[in-house]
Picture 1 (tube, rainbow, N blue to C red):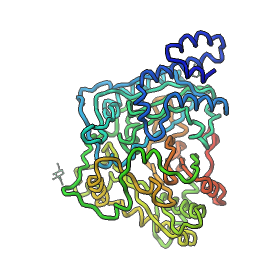
Picture 2: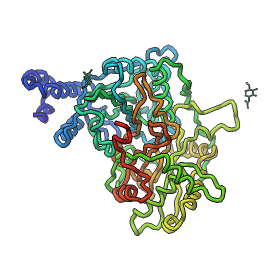
Picture 3: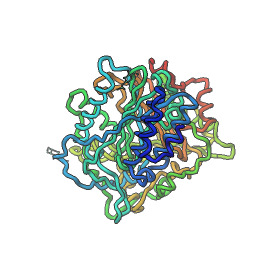
Picture 4: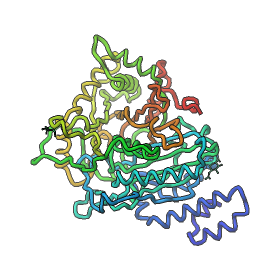
Length: 517
Ligand SMILES: *[C@@H]1O[C@H](CO)[C@@H](O)[C@H](O)[C@H]1NC(C)=O
Ligand SMILES: *[C@@H]1O[C@H](CO)[C@@H](O)[C@H](O)[C@H]1NC(C)=O
């Protein structure tokens, strides 16, 4: 029946609804499909088709949703789309914001965050939704590029942001299960087809989903050209502050003034690390392994233990360095025997590293991408034999290569020398052998994300990306606020097995118990 609905021209959908509405259980579903069909009319197919990597068209999303519905009984229906515009655009008349060189390095991957809230004590879902859209409108006044459109400039063939208050898309959705029935360990797979993917019409999508227990999830999806995790963290924090009637703690800086030196110069090692590529190449990254997307809980005591083991002879290592050393040592046991070396990479935020010579200039509130990927390489032998502290020393040395202003100035110049077009870390594109990239979001707002109806029980990254040439982990503080972490991971099966079966028990498959649900 459902597939039939999809093939019906939109005009017929209302008639169909009338015929089928006699079955009360199905009524909701039918309503949702006709609203999905309406969405497709609203968005020209070119827009849907030009979505990133894996953005499924709405109809394929619906068929995925139907499949899931058959397999696990979990369905989400989309009942309303709202376009939310900045409440005031007086301070930002329409203009074009040129992307910086580092924005061009972002791969345009969609970035999705998923937050879960218990049933609000006093508010109804409708009033929650109302509150969210009105505080979003005020937040977009400060973050007007997020309400713009990202289009390719025909002359330069590079994307740019048209700041014209086109709006952000907010989708209302209803799930047919309570929050405690979500599969938190296999969250990405569980939610597949249940989250509206980004399309280029709206670089910011928000989905607010009501569950049968009265709980709520909020999904935020950004086009990476808008910024990096620091930028999105600031945006989300501002939104939650506005929702609580506070003044925002950070005034965003939208200048995107990271310009290359003239003439551009860079260290030749950057040619090994980064590469020019097309959006098609990004969408079709050869992926050797099946990749699993899994969510883990890491106890604060586990992190502390790893850190203690990594700090010997009075040398201090950070929690992330210690954690990386642990992952690297486990990972090396799971790669093919023919490999002699193994890489690990880290995303490094350049904000605190730049402009040190001018104490009056801070990039702390810079909105955009200021990220580099730095890699360490070590022999399989050294990684297997070395102690945790030995490997932590290699980690420290690798990260130090990028935590300085010179690296970022070189990177900006490297991009300048390779424009126009997209560029990416060679290894992320799958051209550097076995590797895993770790992204640390130590200061990313999680517990702070209270929109006036209580703090979340979970805040994590979801990946809609299907092809990536490396393993990937994203670390966040857990909403419990007790020093524990949430790690969202993309892993090959042998690595997932090795991490979970390791006697140290650092990686605990996420469950509702960890979330107190
Ligand atoms: C949200 O879900 C709850 C529980 O199923 C339900 O009582 C409520 O009516 C829903 N809200 C809306 C606006 O549909
Ligand atoms: C920083 O600002 C102060 C006060 O405006 C000024 O006196 C000082 O010269 C500035 N320093 C630099 C390096 O520009």
